[in-house]
Image (cartoon, rainbow, N blue to C red):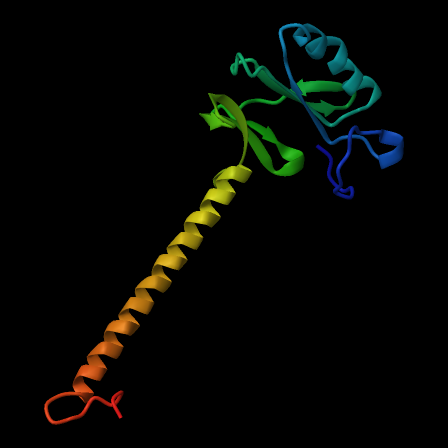
Length: 169
């Protein structure tokens, strides 16, 4: 995660081309690399790249998650909040565990949240927009039906006893 740079698609992050290093790194652990990621790799981020915040998360063991913030020359653990979330101060956000389905897979996921709750996934945003569009369309259909009913009522009044139907000339 990097703030203060132009948003664009990248295949990789090259510090000397971007002009700055990442503000935070999120490491997704795997059985084969967890020890390296938590040890040597963390030290590279701490000692050489000086990344202000480092997080790790094991998607197959969600309790194995941690965050660290650079204080002086060393990473210090970030304490979990009462709800178990990990603050990401540089972004004013936090990581929370969420149990649900994403991309057809039901699991415990790491999700972004702010003080108001989960940040929506793109599919959730699309679903909300579709539901709002459907609600607007339903309301428009109802207004059209009501207008037709009112028009029929007014025509009936005009064509009442002794009044010719104005549409028949």
